Length: 390
Ligand code: NZQ
Ligand code: ZN
Image 1 (cartoon, rainbow, N blue to C red):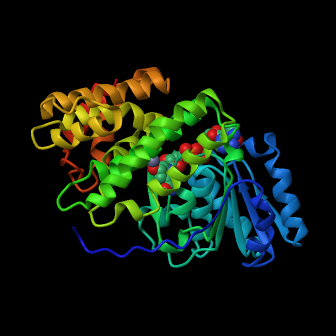
Image 2: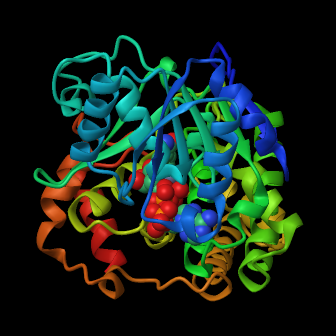
């Protein structure tokens, strides 16, 4: 187990009718706010009107950036930063999902950089400071509402890269499960696959030298929570208990707590980001397709016990099976969950993806030559995983 420092200072308002505190919280950071949102879902569910009303009550001057794309573009981030500079914005309010929040994080950092945000994303320039960020979450998936990272896409170069800095941690996030009642069955499935992948990638199927048993057990409980409530939320979108459990699970999957004491190596995320970068697909769906193929690729005498444990503790696989048989049964159960219970299509070709870019994608997924993780992968291994996913 490695030494670690854990600090997460995001203040969470969880539950219904918490928005009455929004105005006062945002006002703490100044009087000019940039409201950032996506393609219109917040207007369709009536959330936009509520937000405007709360901000007006405390006399905020409101500016807007609408139309943030899923897989947010660096050009949209630059546009937002321009609005901030022109209008001397004090604070940013992201209302939406991971894409909107990540775009807002890009804007927050770009505000203090006199140039293209892409320089900050690629590391050509360093983030020095960020505008304060508040969020109102509308979909349970990424954990961006309670973490210090964002993922920005450059469609001209087919790159999708993370921007991480402590100053990007949201100051306050509002998590009202009723704001996720309108999330489609498809996006609920994708979000759930993303939460699971964070739990796997960040710790559960990470390099296992000296892991903490306590964290492993907590992760299993969160995995069980997603496995239990995602199907309920898909069948009954207004089930508060299901939406609340998914929402809090999503935040905890990536807020830093579960990644303590290990070297984090998000293997499947690195591969999926290449898929989104080249084909603009939904992040969680890409993960759902890749993850079981990755599991099969790295299955060995060394990894089998952890996969078997996953199967026994999550899906009730027979504990008397051998490690290898138990691991295979676990992967099969997980596939059934993703592709039958959640109803996600299970092949990249279903998303109109062919193999013509696989070689270059595999190379880009391994920026330091190899991909660290539970098992180290070479670009050739990654290419084989992509081929298996076709
Ligand atoms: O744009 P609108 O109209 O809001 O519609 C969105 C979008 O079409 C819709 N939606 C969101 N809330 C809704 C709703 N529809 C109906 N009712 C609601 N209440 O859902 C669609 C997807 O939204 P998006 O924000 O893209 O989803 P998600 O939260 O899954 O975010 C995905 C992005 O986050 C990145 C992903 O790579 C991807 O770019 N990630 C960010 C991470 C982070 N910051 O820590 C970590 C993750 O691993 C991930 O990489
Ligand atoms: Zn993710």
